[in-house]
Image (cartoon, rainbow, N blue to C red; front, side):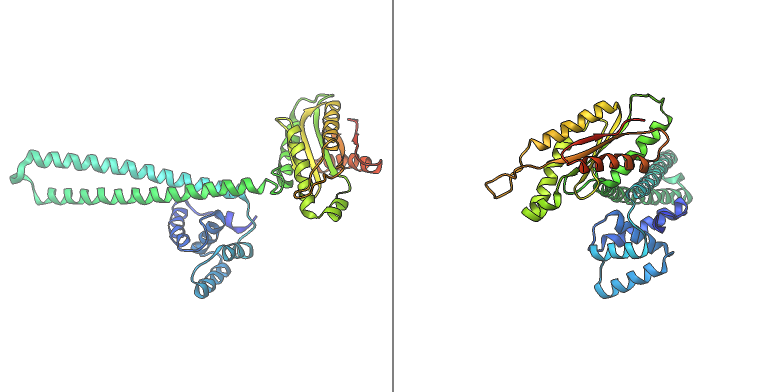
Length: 346
């Protein structure tokens, strides 16, 4: 984890840095996204002299930071993007600003009531009895009301900026968990869901015939497909296989692309027989399909996949679980491919 998420600033200090960073960000050629905000937050905080010096040099030579410059500065001087942490940071700033806005609104209401009370008092006293001191207090109260209104406007503007940042963080976080080619979950999302599922399985009441199950799947002879028809058609095959897998994933399961031509289907507690039948259905569906090359009249004769299925053994690590499913997949490939191998629960 990089330094950008290790600040221990007070709410007051964070608010001041936020106020300083947003105007600087808005003058750049880069969008107002979490990476840009992290760079400028650290810049105004003054706790990263190498980053500040690099940014000053870039600004002096180019006048503004574009997307490439922002991401380069972030990678070199801040940290790798962590969308989950960035989400917590953005949510934290939103809570700070909301609290400030509520306090400002309350103070504004109290000031308005005080001003109304002074006005009524002045009317009751009349012009002859209204003292210069009272007039001065009323004038000061009106100035305070105007100042509170300006503060409220600035807070509202800042809250809108933070809302934009939060939306961008959500988008980045979503995209960081999705495989761009297939739309399935990627390896990172798979690892996260696997860890969560097994953590639940460790504390749940054990059931002898129902445990989380993992299906691993490879496209057979994929290198030959790429070599014979080109990488564009190879991508088309990957997408077609992914669509079949997505259609067969149960509601509580997860379909993921975890490698070039390797896929995973993570199932919630189920029986080994059910997992095996699902794997066979996936295999048969793909084997019975034909994929037509774009711009070509003839379809590819046949695409097949090999699958390995393993049930979870209570107490094993995620890595051990994946390794056993991989052993089953290797057995399918060694036995001739286009088949399913199921490991027993024992």
